Length: 324
Image 1 (tube, one colour):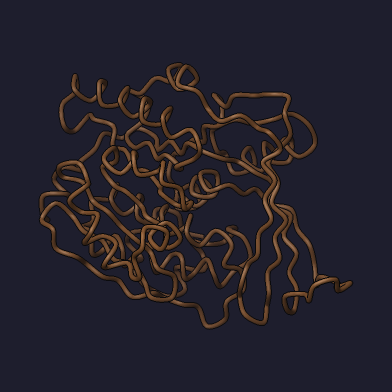
Image 2 (cartoon, helix red, strand yellow):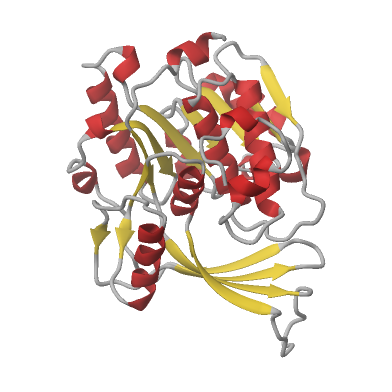
């Protein structure tokens, strides 16, 4: 294995996902409704959402000891989210509770096209502060993933705390950092040099003027910190990534026979990549697995049974630590 894999021989701590936990109210419909139309959904379900929470949920499905960290409210909706985490044995001990509302997404899934349309309400929930992060014991973790939210300056300071911690540790005991650049915001660029792995969304890439995943990682490679990896997923066109050697790797997409639920496919991709790197797979294999797992997710409702469904395809059977 090449340089990145040797660098990612890690300790056995937990994976921490930092960002948003939200309530998703998902309406599955035959098609997307017309404007001003009184339209009936086939069925409706509540599920947990938010990029970081979704990634944590998928890692948990893969058998990883993982933890969510973020702001959380009180009340019925927050209780639903906590119940979900407890049922899946997801850790969330250090979440920061507040009396603001719970972020909620109203989602329309179209069975005709496989699209998902999201209307999100933040409900004034505050973002994490640096002093919240300072309460964590970094020795508990081997990997910390940051969802790039509107507290970018605070995230930078949090990562600098990790860098200071790492400076006193051997390579094998350092905490690895990944960041997600999803929303089209210029301020997210300050995170580009802070991650060992940087996940760049299609929306952010287009916002920066790129028309493909390969062009995105080729252009942004020089802005990464030394030894880092950049990965850009591009939906049906697969994903491209670049590592320390500057060589661009590509993975095709693995679409399901029928797209049932594409909500959270990007979060599943990120979870698959992080999981692969923790298993010391090289970049090419990590992207292949992440694309495959995201494709499997698009073929099922929600996340329950993701591994069981993935095992039916007889791909990477030795990579799964959970059977069923």
